[in-house]
Length: 72
Image (cartoon, rainbow, N blue to C red; front, side, top):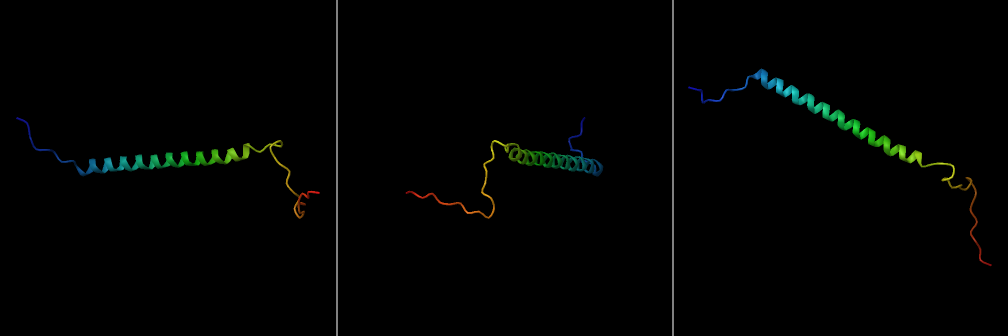
């Protein structure tokens, strides 16, 4: 003869399970933050890598005004 009634969880077991869920949630948050930081660094690095001496275009010297082309 077996018991047909369900056994209730003890408070200790519920507290342990809650603690495990909280630890897992904190761990996932840390992972997500780390991924976002890596993505931001990768984006920043892409902007820096593409500037070489050949790729730069000379700009006007500060204080000078470019002269417009005149058709004669």
